[in-house]
Length: 108
Image (tube, rainbow, N blue to C red; front, side):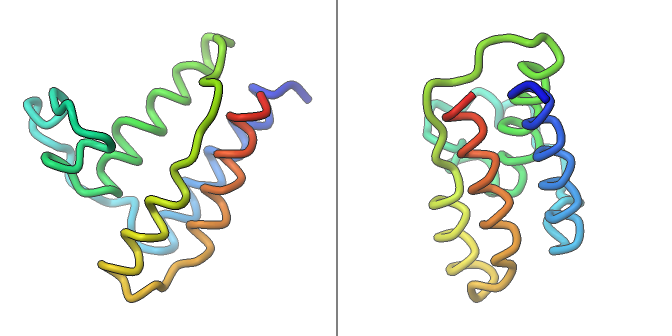
């Protein structure tokens, strides 16, 4: 299995994990929200919105194109902080799955 194939599987598993944690069904951000210059679009999107509509969408596009993956990826720590602040630290399965995506991207 190639790195792209492994990442595709991990992204599907992340979607399932986010859905189970009730963090997948987030509203689509306004068009202006995508123009943010801040990391994770913190000034215009919630982290689950950014994760679904920016991060995962971009990674899926790279997988589909079999394009080069980013040199490193470390989104899980941001999600862990967000969950602590917004979900009382619940949903550690999300952090675990996101850590796997981070690993696959970085090693890819």
